[in-house]
Length: 360
Image (cartoon, rainbow, N blue to C red; front, side, top):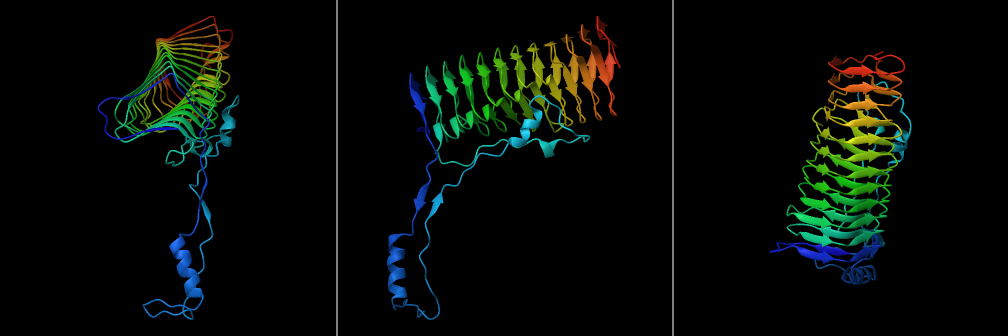
């Protein structure tokens, strides 16, 4: 739809616009006319000046093909995480977590593409119903999106590639078929006061340095936020409600995000899932009617939270070793449960009004 590129003295301003329904174009690539003429001449009995004749070689026209080839990844296996726990006894879940990615594109299927040294200031605009992604930013120069709506893409609402710099504020990211935001390695967006809702996954943060504040992340089918591949994201003062899972923190051990001062409530599977050796810091949150699950070698630090009104406040499984300290764990069916070769350090927590055991 719009491509912004090259070194710029000031941002390209996109104001009060609608950019929508851009699809990947499959362009037939035919044999060049000059080669067709040479083929006809040679096969009719001509020869090359180098001495080859038609008895030693045959030239046939190249059949037309279509390019570019593109395909969004198959993520159907992710349905295992929509409302149920997949069967696994392993420390490593890589085999059952599909890889979300954006296929190589020269701009086809993209609403707005900011590349090279380009940058934009986009305000009061809507970008929607584009085939691959509504907004793709690969430029290191800082762009700003404010009071925008990014919705109904067949792929992603916004993709930020390596080292992209962007600030997103006071906006809506809704109803995107794969994910609202896909943030890749070393990108460092600042996302504030954004509603991210009713996507397949709200945000996927991979090896990034994102900073989320005061966002409403709700009603995303599989999860609100998925964090992995060495991410150091910070999520603070956000509300995560009614997602399949609130926040998933996944492999490897270099995945060390911080979740602080958030409210996680009513998420179907759990509020916080820590797995695959990841080491998040989970502190000063309210986790209600969804609980915390640590499994498959997860090693989070869980401190100073209020964990209440869950079936199990903290569930620890499968070789995991969390540090759980100075939390208020109250009014759950069971305060904490440790099973299936798991361990952990529980220190200075307050267990109160749990219907069954404090710890089992």
